[in-house]
Image (tube, rainbow, N blue to C red):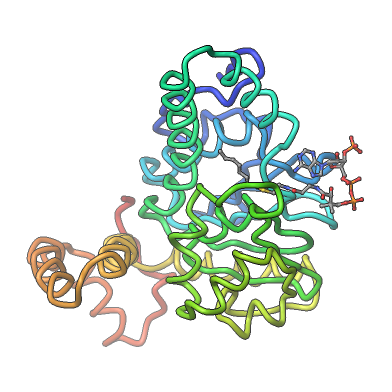
Length: 298
Ligand SMILES: CC/C=C\C=C\CC(=O)SCCNC(=O)CCNC(=O)[C@H](O)C(C)(C)COP(=O)(O)OP(=O)(O)OC[C@H]1O[C@@H](n2cnc3c(N)ncnc32)[C@H](O)[C@@H]1OP(=O)(O)O
């Protein structure tokens, strides 16, 4: 299903069901009904992000968006040492080398622009997926890992995790979302600039202090287990309410309060007509857990 053309980060094809996906860079599983576990699976290469990673990441999250059986997602990584060491530097060098072989500067610039926008798409697919994505973090999170984690809705971390916005050290300004999303997540411009301009390492405890992660657990296993438990709880709630909440919060982040209030009024003018509202309200009145309520897939 996935075809890498040459050694380049090639174009993704859209799929509508996660069950049909066969990945090289990820392991996919369903640990609880409605919960999709997506595990980055290149531990021998530091879970670095190669062509398969980018291609399949976009496909997996687009498929999850369309797959009505998926209600929440946990993004984790194989091995103990790395969550991800960022972009695969060998593959990046190969692709940049191909671009630089072009004679004309205008053509080089257009090819680079195309490549950057293509690599942004998988990260945007995580942020734009209406199903909530929980990053379960351990070990090293370098460069592209921060781009990807900044696109998640919730981040939980193991105490051994460490982070670096590494791009300035490899000679570039980060271009896959960190500089746009990370400052908004932590809400501290001075700290965001310090971390991006110096590439200094920060640990799990500092990541929690600045608000990049919301909880710290003792080890990888406990972090994943907590992330899966939260994902399970979310999967038991009304998909209309959950997905609407993510869509509305994404919109609010990018617009004024006034615009956001208009958008939620328009959104809920339609969505409040869902039978999910009556079912959820009735369960609350009857003191029934939402796990006992059957909501239509979305
Ligand atoms: C258009 C978009 C352009 C760019 C976007 C960039 C975003 C970024 O991600 S910038 C950051 C890139 N990443 C790095 O700079 C990290 C590079 N890696 C390291 O510095 C080290 O590996 C380490 C993370 C400090 C860990 O060192 P150590 O514990 O000694 O392990 P290693 O033996 O070095 O690594 C194990 C294994 O993984 C391979 N590997 C690690 N990182 C990468 C990588 N980024 N790309 C490709 N391969 C990587 C490493 O080569 C080892 O493989 P072997 O086969 O065993 O040699």
